[in-house]
Image 1: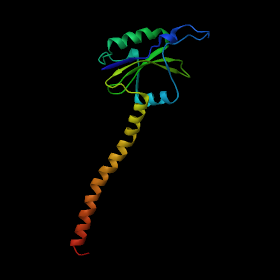
Image 2: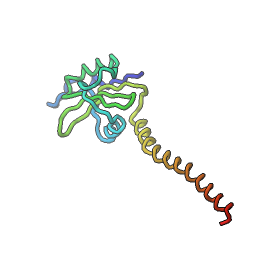
Image 3: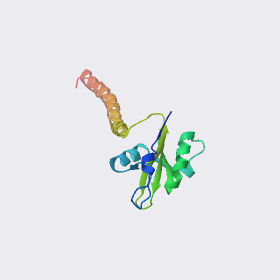
Length: 149
């Protein structure tokens, strides 16, 4: 199992802006869309089941991040969850906190997986239909020919 934290100590230094510094990278644009599609199950950290074990280093990172966000959500699919910090309700901003799971995937790899998943079902269904129809047509044609029509 891998654990990837996104905390950036350099971002935690106070800047000249009045907006508080958030030491985690913001998800936006295509990267946000890719992660939202790849990790479709979303729960607030308070609603996360105790049976879904979160590794101790991930819990430590989530605890450290709680003061920076209005809420923290766990986005997941089968074995690849990610903790996301959220600020705002109407126009929420999303920040990567920590990700853990079976495979360390980059956004580019996730995008490729989504593309494969998108086309896999239609191609499999088409192949299955053809595997059924071609022999059926062959049997019908053979019966038609041998019957003398």
